[in-house]
View 1 (cartoon, rainbow, N blue to C red):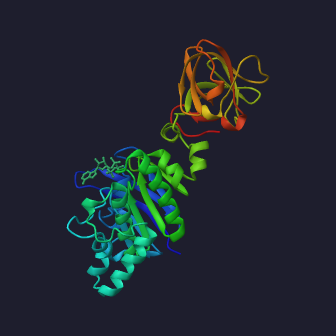
View 2 (cartoon, rainbow, N blue to C red):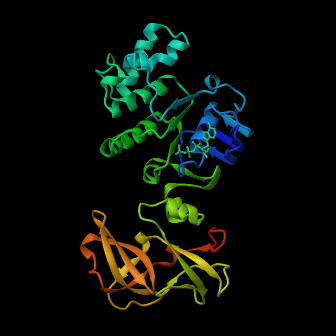
View 3 (cartoon, rainbow, N blue to C red):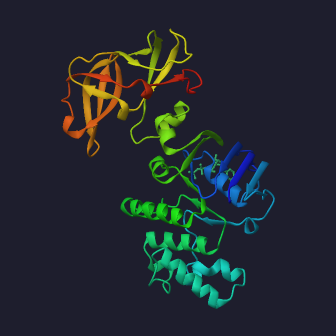
Length: 356
Ligand code: ATP
């Protein structure tokens, strides 16, 4: 079982920046784990601290149950792929892939066998004698992955593995990476600032802000039930509606233009809250509906492909709702929005933490 256990970890740079600020998390054996957050939140620093490339200032890192906090990178059993791939330009693909084995004085015949096997796994057959400059971005990325895998690390650490690829290649590489990780079953931590990439690839996601963990959960959990308004804002290709509301009686919450059903739990009637509801979870109708609803008029509709994002003005507040493209209402139309109770989340107005 090769897991990673991080306890009370802090990484403080000499200039005093606490890039990682008291983190606890565990990555399970064989898990594909994403570190996600905006630029500067500390995700690269965390990855580099796991790798041993930055010293931990506080706390511990355990890999495969062994405390590696003070071990040098080469002794931790990790293989890292850097954002720019860090391939050696003067070496062939084969030499690049087997470089870590050469350093360990593995015999040339074994190295050749490893290069051949790994290039097969990573669809690099026929390219072994080329140099990195003669490869496409996607091929270079696969060489970097091949080198990491050939090094037989117990865990794979990937820093923004797809960010240097263009949009089409990135999708292809994403599918490839997910399949490879599952086939190899190697515990993998990858850093990304792209929430769509994290949702698509990861078994679980750690969302970070200012060196701290803001939520840890499956893609489904962080999308459907963000633990706070920071995560609510950060996750999702269309932003979550975050609206000012007041808890009303009978399991509903009043907001601009009407009300929505909500499981108010222990939040008292009359409490002012921030109401979170995703555009995907609102239903748009023309004409009356039964139960709590919001009424407004369509301002604009944006085409998202098969869906349209419709902006509805409700008593001076804009609310986004996605509808199938063929049901896009005309600007100016009066519409009614509803949602099921489980999709309406209540956040503390001050702290932004999920209440119910
Ligand atoms: P990005 O997505 O932009 O790479 P990140 O989430 O990976 O960002 P880090 O690169 O880990 O963030 O940086 C976290 C914080 O630490 C930032 O405030 C950054 O300015 C600071 N930082 C990073 N490297 C150093 C360094 N070598 N010395 C001092 N401060 C640093």
